[in-house]
Image 1 (cartoon, rainbow, N blue to C red):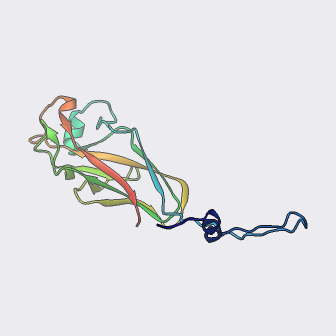
Image 2 (cartoon, helix red, strand yellow):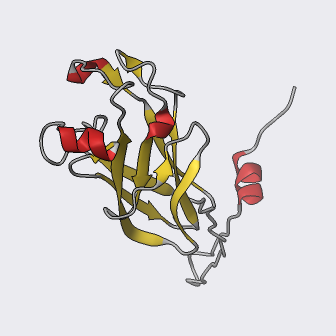
Image 3 (tube, one colour):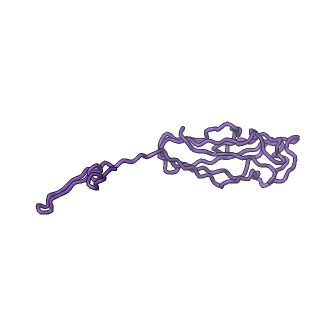
Length: 172
């Protein structure tokens, strides 16, 4: 049987006692510590869905003749981080689903400038932008361009063609 004495535990935890008659002081030094881990946040707007609608509002002969159309608007990315960071994008499928299953993900091009949409969407994670220093809020827009072909892109319902794409933030 073990006997436990409250003052024994208190001594092990750190304590001091003063004599009440002489008002002596007592001092205990305590070291407070914390671990601050790398913390990153990514906000994607417009959320979980982005429509590949032509800037003109509807596909036309000129889009097919050009072999492409620029999607209206952009996907907005906001990153916040207390450490170096990198934002990556990747398709979760090699081709679109639904009525567009013959359309490869790589026929969709992206860029961070509206005038430079030249990087094919890939199933491999591709760095969109990064930073070597912490940031309270770095933003970037992703602009999309869709390749078109008279023989490969027949009419389909708008909601029938989807491509799951993932954005992630992590260390560079």
